[in-house]
Image (cartoon, rainbow, N blue to C red; front, side, top):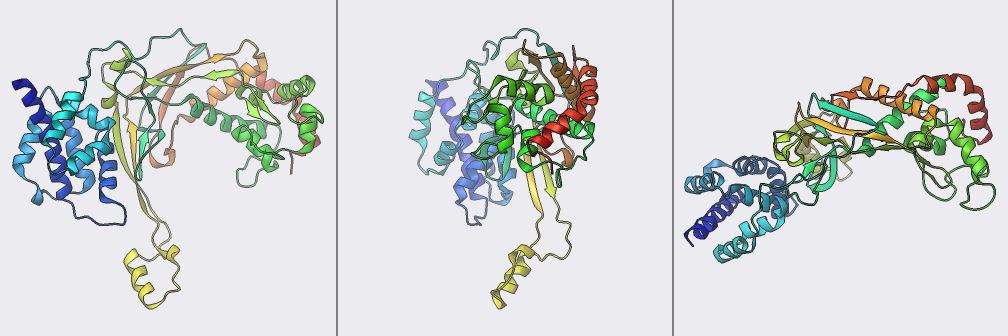
Length: 426
């Protein structure tokens, strides 16, 4: 019973600190303050310990120490050093909105007690989240040299969270780098290489292709009625709506090996022949590393500067509007802060590529060329131009690219004739 009481006290002390931090902030802005604070709490709980999370929360809010009760801080730090701290952090990490509602409640003693009673403590000694799979056809290892950004669809205000997943049997969200993102980078690199190899000028602002073929080449296609030319439709499937004919598909696959390899959507989806798997970090949860998943993460606080020096500040725009209603607010300064959750430098990601048994020698060569260019590029993820994403990429069993390069040199004229026939060239 005494242990239960101590546990409740630790949870109460944590909520008391959150409430104290909220009271130390001057409430401004149009957005609901508690929604804003819940987003900051979600960001803060990406830290690996409760102590770090509470400190991060206070920093993110921009609170003032002058309005914080030091007794509350003392009790919270005691709770953060207790055996209950990991469970408190995990609960808040999963339920930041409810945690904010609890902290907002004035009389919450019974509420906190019910939460503690109803919360099943998480066992820290769990089996690996993922079993070790067989060796890939082409194993990939990427060592992060700078922090690596890879955004998820989770929202936390204007903050970008890293992409993560929660496998069965694991109560910690594990970061990963999407195989689809690897395929996207390789597709861009191979599209540029293909364009130059057939004697055209690569350009994303003024491409040598019609827009529908540009999307097919660089993005894998575009869905929608009438998205591609009638000539291309006829080549692939004749006159029947949505149909494909084997001769048309084979001709396309044979002339565009890298698109056949990665897949695309022309008249209907054309399945790719390379299976690019996600990259997972070496970590405790996967029984592949010494650090736990939360310890792999960091934050990058970056800024996007507005290079146009003729813009007005927000206060100047406000003054102008008082005297002149016809004021262009686009004059205001466009600098902005970009907060992004990243993988730390020195994190090692592991994954690989499997190849379909239907893949031709030339398609396999295209894969080898794509992987080689990706390795030479040495960047993954978003924010490449903001100082993040540099990686050392290593492979085993990388295919020989020579059959693909020889094919492009030999078939260049036939490819250009095909592109002309389907109305793909400008």
